Image 1 (spheres, rainbow, N blue to C red):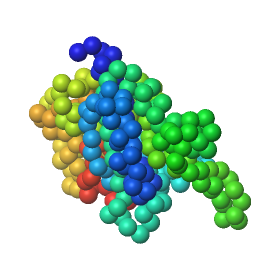
Image 2: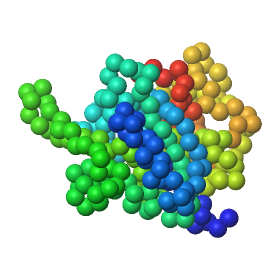
Image 3: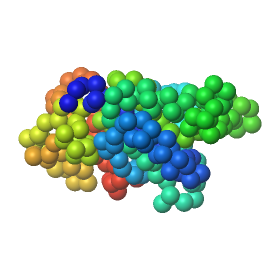
Image 4: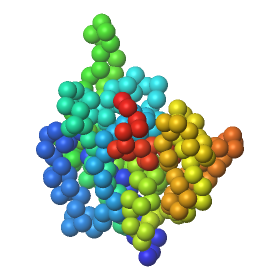
Length: 246
């Protein structure tokens, strides 16, 4: 397959879109009929804190960061209904996938989307002011219904954060996947190659992992510098698992 037809992008249908019954609308706008793009992977995700923090790592330390984490975890829109907290994660694939999706999504800020791109998905979103304990406005959070990868580098990082290789059909893999030949376990922020009590098995011999993830694990275990954090590798393997309590 031509490499340009393998371009992939991550879309997240966020909790506010789900609560407002916009899932069908979003999927219709992003359908193969309208975009020429195909599904490469899809899953319903209960977003744990590790996954949320890794997804929004670039915003850590910003005033809206704590609210952003609660938003993507579903705690803002479903404060008392934990079973409803979820995100729909989708990998779209095809020529010019990233730009096509972002064009339909519209500007990140819903107010700008309504002004510059009326009819886009995010034009239906809201901007929520954030206040400190005294009631002073200190920032704002964009409840903008969907996430769409900004560029090829972000798309690769985000797809590998949310999806394992076996979540995507092998013929649709845009990134190299390799077979693991040893065990990897995770517990309390540390990596092990033999079982520790109350640890989670991330990979076992015979499992397939993204090549870059396996390279990162090998470096991290040896105490060497890796291109990514341990949590960014581990997070996908703990999606919808009871190992992480939030």
